[in-house]
Length: 173
Image (tube, rainbow, N blue to C red; front, side, top):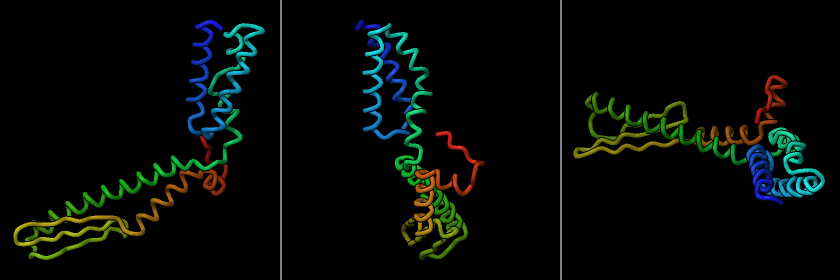
């Protein structure tokens, strides 16, 4: 096999791997890529490598046909990323609310002591003013953690939502 043929096949397999885009688990993806490689090399012996690669068709279409068997598998990495994103958003909201709350308490001329707030049960914070300084603390409560877990589960298992919503939702991933 010539260098140009190897590069052509490697480029196609690279595009195929990108087209899988997390829709197929790692081990089956490696097995499928090995099969495509072996079958394409065998087909190239009877014709040419460009003809064998052209016969495979677009990499996205081939990846989509392979991914059909894995359509209902949970996408845990996406779900975890979404859950962490929700938690990070809640923590950022808690930080901003605590800063604004602290400014308001301080501008209102509050006496030294601890002042706290709770926003919809999702974020909470406190502002402790002493004679020589202040302390800000913030966090998320149990409802915020429950919300993050629910978002992670809904993102990781989209077919559960699809069953409830019906045919209005189409899975594009």
